[in-house]
Image (tube, rainbow, N blue to C red; front, side, top):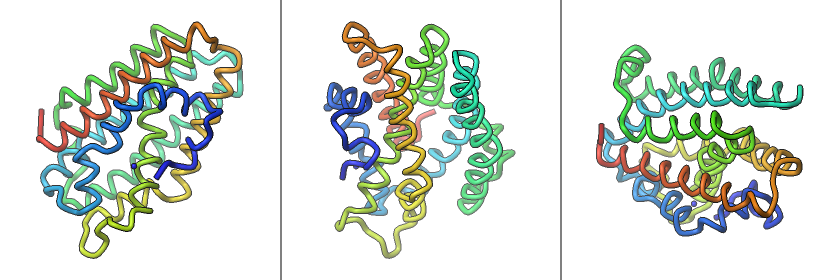
Length: 231
């Protein structure tokens, strides 16, 4: 998806992780699902399936940030994690439900839908990395989603070849390209660097790459789930 402002600097931990997983990152950010959002050819039923699973996905991401608060060792880190839980539960979920209503989806129906295998795989992987590791492991596992969506949104918005007229996915692109979400992505990149100052080392970098790569692959699987209507 032009490189996003959050990840331009080669000095960030995020950019080092992304560069170490360049092939997987390209497969995720350039997935057919994303390309078909850009040109407006993604079938409606694929997008609805994605939206439903994304609702369920967000619930587990709120749990992940609650776990981050537990794993935190400073009051500032607890506050940031608690703010993320509140943002998801009190704001983002409501916005997502309102957006889904435009596609004929009710919250009750979404909540009653079983999780797809791809949804379970990524969300449980994030929670497992947080439970088994420390707060840095957890945030590295979250980064492909949090920062990746910002990169995707910015690139699609800037792409002169993107279909705009009559494209039903323009609002989705504009949401992730917008300044509010770009600020979220920038903050996630900065937080990784701050956490890494005390917890990262040359010896640990390979383990962080492994986590980042697996999370990136699971994100690509999430797109594939939407594209194929996989359960």
